[in-house]
Image (cartoon, rainbow, N blue to C red; front, side):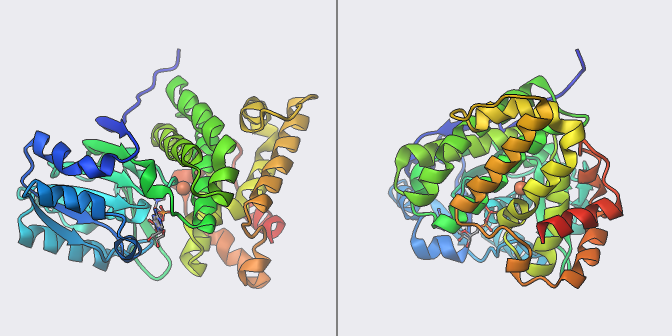
Length: 387
Ligand SMILES: NC(=O)c1ccc[n+]([C@@H]2O[C@H](COP(=O)([O-])OP(=O)(O)OC[C@H]3O[C@@H](n4cnc5c(N)ncnc54)[C@H](O)[C@@H]3O)[C@@H](O)[C@H]2O)c1
Ligand SMILES: [Fe+2]
């Protein structure tokens, strides 16, 4: 058997309503002064109120940093670190989507009293050193899986993002409380859900690090999410669908944390960078076209996933035929979710596609995982197909 490693968060609590037990969990751990890291949308919705009340009742000190921006820039991260240091907090709670959880990871690391590193030092793989403050992650989107990944992504320039990758970013607790996701708007549910499905698909076809455990997580994550994404999008208050999306997204997160994503994400990033298209939607726009491009090398694996994603369909024929049908069904699913399906609709000039292709080629960290090698010409052809 090929050797592999699999790392994930220390404890996972999957329980509707668990956010209201946050103070109890913190007390059990002996934390005394915690900081919530969240964004203005969540603050306005009051999603964290139940959790805050629990700290009130327990007479515990709480600070709140609620200025996280989507695709967080460095300035936001630095501000949050300063506030955590000033308040002398001893534990960090990331409460929100991938943006809030990613900021929380870095704050937990760089606000540790013994920390000697700067933000710029930790970009890349394995560069973060030392200890972090205790970290609890509470996702409010069923999407990034950041609660179980070793990655934090920061926007470093106008259009560039950097990732820091370290096992230190795996939290002490990932808390999956589906009640928090009940009000997630349809377009966010759809886009973040497709992002999570892409995590599972790309983990399952990842070139070198795919392993028996990531395969298990990817397949079960896809089964749950494919069965629930339409209900969660169109009937947002369906609790079972919300629970399955949240658990499925976490499983997909565990899969890609150990068997990394590839060309779909590599081609999605420049769309987010240049046009501020949300991460999930960027993935959705290129997904079918990257899958078609990968067909010759990934057909067997896609064919294994087809009946898991669409259990009611009758798949027959060669792996290529089954995979081709799978891609068509995914395209139909994306349409049903109400997501835009072409780059044209996103007001992108066709003349900009070569620049996108050039930028996608910079994502070498991701491209090496793709089942088929991607050249600059290939990247352009994929964007053209997505146009
Ligand atoms: N660390 C990782 O492993 C990883 C993986 C993929 C992406 N990312 C990063 O994650 C970020 C994207 O995260 P995201 O897609 O979760 O979105 P997000 O965190 O940027 O949030 C998007 C919007 O959804 C709102 N929102 C969140 N939860 C809500 C709820 N329950 N109800 C109503 N509104 C809600 C937020 O207020 C915000 O306006 C990007 O920065 C991306 O680069 C990280
Ligand atoms: Fe993603």
